Length: 183
Image 1 (tube, helix red, strand yellow):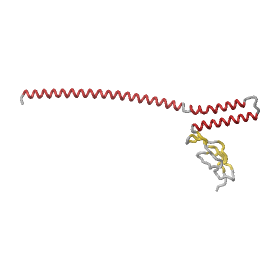
Image 2 (cartoon, helix red, strand yellow; image 1 turned 135 degrees about the vertical axis):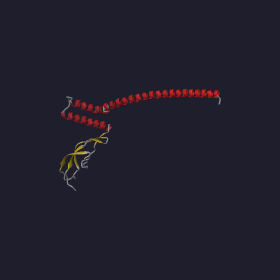
Image 3 (cartoon, one colour; image 1 turned 120 degrees about the horizontal axis):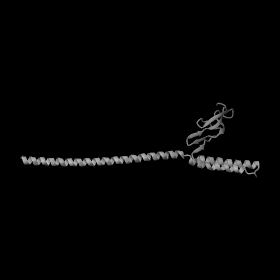
Image 4 (cartoon, helix red, strand yellow; image 1 turned 180 degrees about the vertical axis):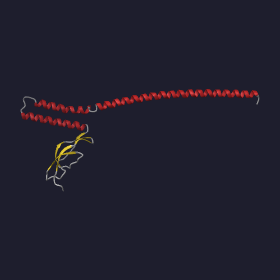
């Protein structure tokens, strides 16, 4: 190989190296631009996430604060019935028997409205039959009474109704239970 060919070859190699260097620099610039674009996207997505998290937290707090609003609205008719019963009894032209009858009707209407509102929101009366079996998960025994006709542990009387919300006991039914005869 002659001197001229060597120089020509070296020049070609230099040009090739310079071209590869430029391509490498272009690739680097493209990668840096993509990296910067990805970082910006990440920051926007992260900011969106944080904003959504804060909004959901505010909505959760608001939902908790106003969770009883619908229940309270459903109790208002019962309160109105009590007001009407009181107004009906307060009239001057009623005798005592009429006043008691009006009051009784008002109380019955109010109880009915309370039960409807409770049922609408999943609150139910714990059903108990006198003579039924005592269940410590549903009942609270306040008294034990002698009753020769009942077996031990049978419910003699319901003193106060119990209520449950869905599957949870709000208040157990208060009952009197027979001491009775063990069989």
